[in-house]
Length: 354
Image (cartoon, rainbow, N blue to C red; front, side, top):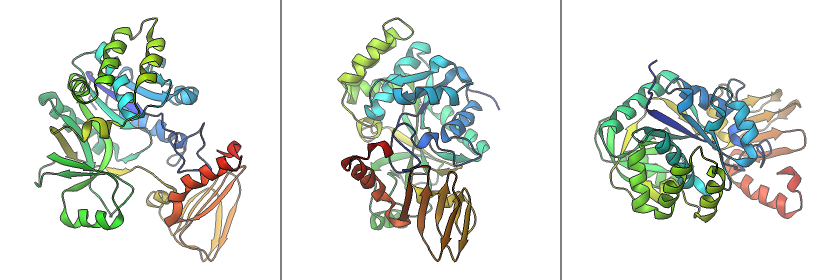
């Protein structure tokens, strides 16, 4: 495969999250879990984009808590390309930081931004779609996003409403926050709605113009950081800039406000693995199982065990997770409450488990 030498890929690997408790913890979030091929989701993402751009054009943004893990997973990427955010300020700040660096490296470059914790197959279709996106943004000063054809009315994803046409690339009418199941059912009946993949692309100069238009505080940060990249005051300036910024997502801060956004209807298979029950789409059989499991009359369950044997009898639609120090049992349709559970653990003085 040919590589795009003036295209940079930014991998977002700084999120914490609680949805995969008790396996995922504050110091070991979802992107470091091994759900496919005994590789972390971050490692799978790195290998996916290594086929697209040179390793020197891959940038991984992470929290200071995860620097050592990320550096180990990114052993074939230059160490300076692992960029540490001093504090969490959501994805707009992360994109701002990446744009500052890429501007300093190559001011006429294109950049892709993508999460570290999605499962995408096959590689060939991912490459083909990235090629289409690259060629489009090379010739158009727009913001570009990738949309996923919905397979069911999910309330777990944001949606993108496109102009009704049969083209692979469509204009975006609006972004929609996570809906109820009933609203999502209406989206599927109406058509023209796609899941928001969280994968974006643009020329670096174009996104900087949008920061200047919609997020002037972030734009001021770009001016400071692009000048100090690879200089002695870099870390000091990153800390100063980040501490001054509001916490806001790139979706809300820019994408939802901009009128010149286009979307590619992807051809690859996508799973953001947003919750335990999402694993059932990755594994064939009556139950989705990672680890040792024996069962009698067990159906449509998700079972994850690090070391222990899990045995189930006469149960259905459950998530069962065991680690060295914790066990979780929850109906699949109530996994959204895991976040509440983690908060409860904190209230009860059991922070060592989170």
